[in-house]
Length: 304
Ligand SMILES: [Zn+2]
Image 1 (tube, rainbow, N blue to C red):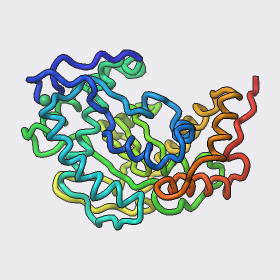
Image 2: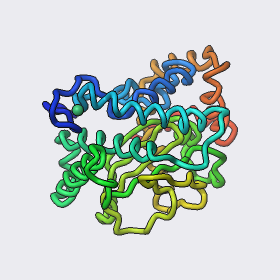
Image 3: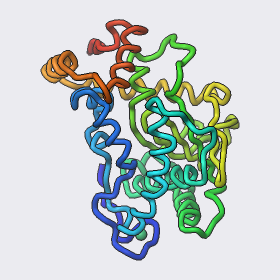
Image 4: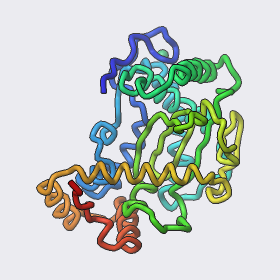
């Protein structure tokens, strides 16, 4: 994947961007590193190294980075950290939550629009829609628009609480829904849904650029304040299937590692320190082992 980034900041378009602007905010990777047990385990949960270290590209200038960090810090402090620890979640998202979600989707979309491999997967119509979306989100972030409309933003605490149906789930399910971090552009085969997606630990977010499919109830974030929705009340079945596919994808990525690497990982797991901050990772592993038994760590035998 090639990505040359930008000559001018994607937000103010005035100053040159810094080289190492994070696409997904840095605090997420800090959390993964601090709570992952060992570096091998972190890789086992999220093997794509670039994502692991936090994907960076020339996107925002220093000034815009600083302004963005204000609502990033607020989200991290008020929502993210309490949600993964023992803290109490607020009942509502704030204005800064909407800004935060909009800003991450803006970075993801502008990042992918410079990625030729990614663009090849899109129809001409989708590419055009993506450019419109980027311009409209930028308009909101730079104070010229009230919202990112017609795009809709969603933020869903998918990996919090206990999932109710574990039948046919991939054996890395708990680790995936609670810990995994990733981003992508999504589009349904029939072309009814198109947008961007990110997952930071237990939180899922979508920016729907187009949705001619099933309407999504709940989970939407609004420019002023919005309720944090109970995930069970809102789950469209297609979203559930999408998440299972993503977990399978993450699992098969970890299965490409060699036997030698696997042996190193096994050793690291047995020697890992899971006290204190790394306990959430241990809990997720323990839950996978409890529900899926040995399959939680077994690689699928190669069929060819
Ligand atoms: Zn700027």
